[in-house]
Image (tube, rainbow, N blue to C red; front, top):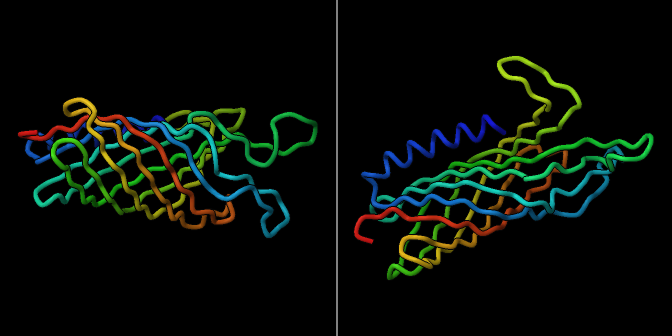
Length: 205
């Protein structure tokens, strides 16, 4: 989690620096949740939990250049660990605490209307990082108490920006992740929906 946040912070800082010469840059922080099919049983007869639910904070940044074309990126993670395979109580029960993290990098098309509202549509690639936590730490370059299962993902998304005060906006949004080989969840393709609060840096706005 720390590595992803540091990576995003680095990209975010480069974005701000480059944004001084860009037509427009949006930075935002938000909250949302993930929508996916209900829990099922896999081909081997084992129960598979649902990815649905939980609170997902997010950070995002979007550049828009001339002709409304740009690029952006975001990261979102489950605020509290979920339980995979059962409950954490009860003798003999199988249960593994885990946390999904979604991230993506996109080509973006967006526009702003009359300084009051705007929209963005985006498509790109990213990933799903499933972190399964253990009661012990493993140390290498850093010390961690989890094992990661990483999956490549395609991503499409859309949002609507509503400017509530000057350059500050509220942004309802929806994101779809086509996760490759998402076998931990029967190849589920999840949605993430939420609302972000952000600020637009744009000359002449």
